Image (tube, rainbow, N blue to C red):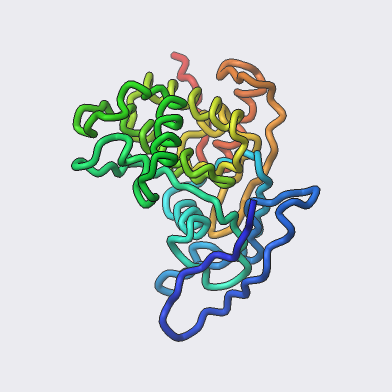
Length: 266
């Protein structure tokens, strides 16, 4: 695994961000993400204001927070789609992103969509077929995107991410547009693929239950800062009705400023 310092090229003035060489990727403590004091400012407002974050390879992290707290901005910086205005950013070079929309090209077949941006050789087509098999779409290799359901299209997007063998997988609310049953199936699929490939995963979500079901660690952003950061010690598979699950959900909702509902008694 190689790590590199990630930024976009912006016109003058030059930003204050200091980018440093990444640590040895084969050290005893391999790191997929290292952020130190990261800031991002829009129209004079610091959406991210001094974010420190380390993510080890194989670790699954969920980012929670109300809209406008910088979750997607942070993900875009990790993806190399945006730059920081201050701090240090070190990100695994082998990284993939799955967005809320599958972003498939209608004029290309499913296997070609998996290889978007990659050379189309016999070896890469084999890799695409293998990735599609992993997400349960082995029979849809030559299908057109218009013939797929919403869940199937998102599986293609996931296969596209996996075909690049990422050390860092970035998920930007990839299940938000799916119906409830499809969403449950996608949760199970992502969990299986994560355990099989062991990339670092950073998931942006508004769904507290989703974060608890999938993550090793949950981070709540508020006011441009990390408000809450906790590792989850719950055994897998996790059940929503377990006492520990319910207690953690209540704690996260409190951190998000959501008061628990109180039953009304006549």
